[in-house]
Amino acid sequence: MCGRFTLETSKEVLESELNISIDEVLTSYNIAPTQKVLSIVGTDQGRKAGYLQWGLIPSWSKDAKIGSKMINARSETVDQKPSFKNLLTRRRCLIVADSFYEWKRISNQKQPYRITVNEGRVFTFAGLWDRWESEDGEIVSCTILTTKPNNLMQSLHDRMPVILDEKAQEMWLDPSLKDKETLKGLLTPYNSEQMSAYPVSKKLNNPSVNDASLVEPIEI
Image (cartoon, rainbow, N blue to C red; front, side):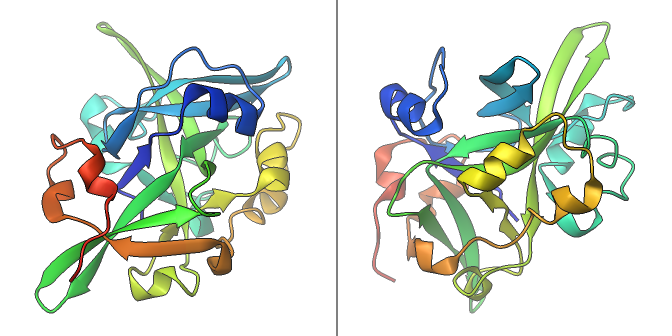
């Protein structure tokens, strides 16, 4: 799964790496569910970047609280589940990060690890988004797709987030692409040789803790 991640890359580097204009970058070492996440959507007019709430609230839901339970979606069944199947062909997004965290069970405890991609460069998760409206206003939210783990991640967890390379990003954001099997074919484990992991402080467990010490390696 994916329950926490980071974005500390500068606005200038993000715009260069992603080839897109970004109004604002909210730096965070501990992005948690229900918070705002930098995302990119594809339209007929091109790519657009903005912030979505992490934790999908389906448009038909009666209660926004469901979002906290829908931070991830399984890629294997994404075209079958009522909350996601209609979004696969019309509301796809990229969620921007520069690392993510996973917890490894060691004895009777869980030790957090930080995972980076391509030596710490920015990358994108495959996501889906939806728009929910109520008398109190509108919430545009998203979920991160997950898949089976690669060789690196299987020692930490039985799932991992879907990370898309540049070619897959283009296809995922192409609004004209509607074929479900083609889209699901993009949702595969990322190359483990391009990833690395190391243990970090358990301070990460508290979502209110958000400083650079969280990404520093520790001895265990």
